[in-house]
Length: 581
Picture 1 (cartoon, rainbow, N blue to C red):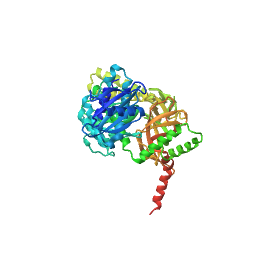
Picture 2: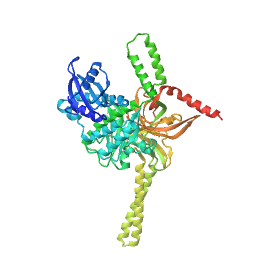
Picture 3: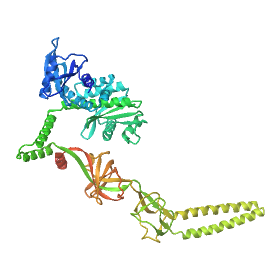
Picture 4: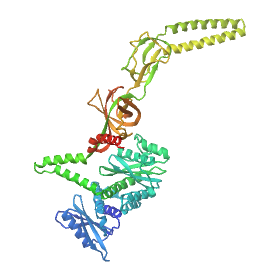
């Protein structure tokens, strides 16, 4: 395992490191063996070795203070590593007591990279962790800033300079959403502006896919990946946009979005992927260190209760633990809040089949609820009068044709022109009648299902031109219409997902995504609801237009106490406002 490459990476990222070592114990209880030192060829001092030995014996981080040759006060930080053999890293740097916790966190999350290195073949391990020299500047810039916001802005600016980007945006995950935290060059922004929201949509789309997205697609990229937010942003700004998630193991921490004139090549994408992992863990460590006392206490309580629940204590504690967990979940716990609404399926498009002429219904071959195919005849109008008129005009046309020939034979040119015009008029009327005869057979414009119309009970009934006889919707192309209560409309937004249970199929869940919110309102007595449209993420063969059921939209994380009390609190707020002068 190449400890030297990993140690070099750690020391370049940590600020003001003077010396560092990695020591390893082959067997428990044995003295530590020096595996790597930084800078290279540096002799490990007794203080470094003693601190490493103490940390290895305690299996815990150790912080000590010593003096160097010039008498300066130096701080020694030791962190044990979860490797197959007991390993310890010790770094020496100027005493900065306010940075102890952050530095220990940086060493701790750097351990995950070392674990990845241990799982790789020896022939490739060192090459995979090698970071280009110029990329260290990004990590150094992020580590040098004490605050999360300034660290993010410094990293974004350095990334923009390093890769020649017009703009670099960094967002961190907050619950189910991504919040824009900083832009390159210390660019000021307001999270409520359209620009910030569009960037957050890019980041949310990237986290939703779980991997890097680039628009427009390069030749090497998968053309089947749908990233509408990235495509729209690239078309709007006329520059390629590249986003990739910042992850630590399986945990998504945030997103990097980079905008420049030229798409990123494979080498640059690999460099960015490496940097994103380190930056995400660094920002997460800074975020944890900047938590307020209330947030720290809340996290500590959650960890304490989790430990109590999983412990193997006495049986008498079970009831107390259960009550405490219930109260904690009620007061401080959170979960996914779902907005319920009545739902109905509609066809994406509905085509009307109308009467082409005035006439009478002769035959009906299909009715509402039946599936039909393109070109299928579903009804016929009576064509008796049209056929009689067609024969009359045909005879008249033949007479004009005979008269025309006669006039030509008699060399009566003027009369022949008149007869020729009459013959052409009769031919045009014949063609019109032919078209009308064809249209007496009502055909289906596409494969679908008849959702309205039944002429089987109206045979012989008169119809007028333009009268709607059938309405047809395509198969497997539906939209979901939700009736959202006006009190829940502020919580529902486009892009949110949910599940639908139909009355006909209560055991089958159908996933959907909200596409359009609060388009039209409807009044049902004293209740007002807003029509909200959604698209189905899967089209089952058993779906039919008009099916109804119950849908629930996942609107995000909410506290359980809020879920139980917000309706009453809202009602009480309105009543108080009405009563107060």
